[in-house]
Length: 85
Image (cartoon, rainbow, N blue to C red):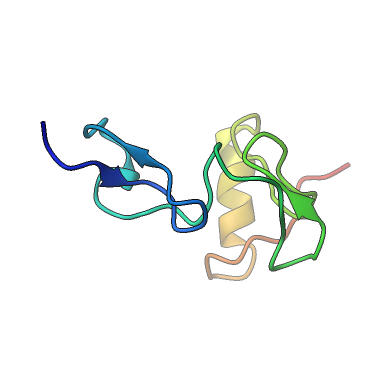
């Protein structure tokens, strides 16, 4: 058996084998094993199961809206008010 792969910088949770995710090569800042933590950006509580309000969920947005978020100012900064009604 190979050595465990580091998954989380915060709680030090490990996984026994590669699973094709970025944590195979780079440790995550937080994971599902971590207790809730204070968001560095907005100061509200955040967890892997319940992200804080400053996170923008892209999975439910149409592709055009996702592109608009990233193109808002020509950088990869996301303006959370774009596309909100």
